[in-house]
Image (cartoon, rainbow over all chains, first blue to last red; front, side, top):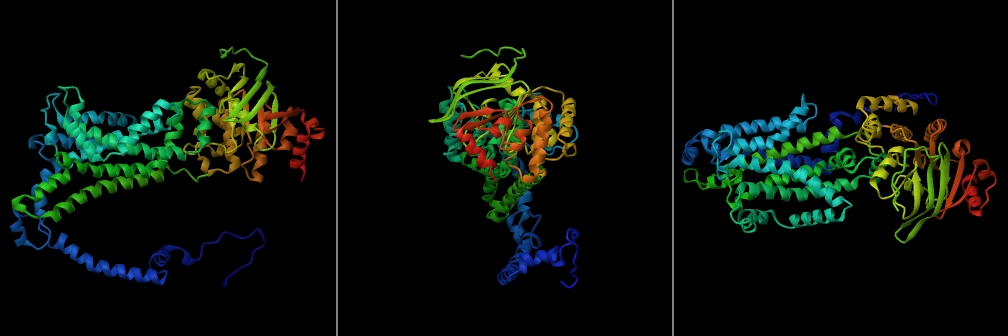
Length: 371
Length: 255
């Protein structure tokens, strides 16, 4: 360097880094054009995007038809996607066959879901303590709202649930209950007490070793053989239980991974202080183990959420089920692309949201360098 | 067998170990340990690695179980009775080689956790006590940081403060300086010397012979799971009796 100065030993100041080490130019150089192969790949990608994007844009946006009454009408109006179909079927997509005049109830439950989620997801919410109490009560409130039958609410048969409504009911229930159950199972499997350990291990291994579809079939058909005669309970409830159990087994293993990654010294320090087992778990072990397991936990959540589409095999119509039946509608016959893009979009938004939240949480819980 | 937790009567001995044995499977780690620690006494335990010195002090708060013999801490016998174990752990503080601070809690929270949950001290009061001890170990300004943001020496001083917050009657130190960079050892030793001056009963497993000379009332040398020799530091260093002690001292003081 031309402007190199010499300093007395011990007097060298901290200087800013050289220009070409920072800024967007550096990023572009590092990521796009740094080497010959990178440059070739960059140009190739740009060319591919050039080939794909205009066509997609035409099909999905520019030539798309938003309002029409049938497929034939759509075809006359434009060459692109026939979104009118989705618009026509929108109510069924969202609510399934939930009685139209009662749809304010799931709507209200949906809004309350966010009220209940806020204090769980963010710890800087005002009146968080009361919010959390509401969150705890929310499953009951939502159940009452959706199913009715008490407080003068007209009962709604759960067989009428469908579409986004059904997907969210199964997904949210599974997610909410599989986490605590998974934590208990993980602690059980990690426990020193042989009886508890064996029970939890057997449960986890059994549930994990069986496909979810099998469990759903058990829920829909076989369970009535095991239950005492005369007791029958709601199919949706049975499905919710099976999905929750299924997810909790996976959850337990993810969390056990987190538990095992904790240094033994954490347990020893807690013991030495005289903390009791549950205090140690709640205050020391789980906060750390769960934090480590966040990626795995969210992975399980997302998997579970998408697995809800399997309920179609026992005749329940979730978003995908409604979509499938819509494809065979004679008026709109054959518009499968629009339908599946719509369904994919729905799932992507939900799952991407979960993924982003987990990244936020990981960043927030990061407390400095690991030893 | 299980003697009931006798009394809160001041027993003169802080710790009494009688004919204690311990095995790891087939391996006989501790052989016939007899040791009496008087209240306020400061003891340094040294010996080659694998000699059982850490295991021995970890038996004194039941981080390790002994299979034969008796251990009485503060007049309470250590048995499988969880009540006794809890009672003893409340009165015995421990400092570990690897600090074992809780990385998800701030320094202050690390210090107030046990007082709040074990002693049921109100939070405000627990924080005042914690700040008092953090000042004592000379890092009150770090109270709101997380352990991961501190140096090793600072972390170990926090660990000492954390133990003191429980107001223990006995402190166990398990190689508190062996995981530290050389320039941080003295800040931790200074803290321990300061603590010794308050009359705390202390058992330290350490190889810091300067510390032993300065504060120990007695030095214990262990090898092969046995107490080989114990003596006043002066005598221990200048006039070791046993061949193994001589060899050990020549090895650690030899250069």
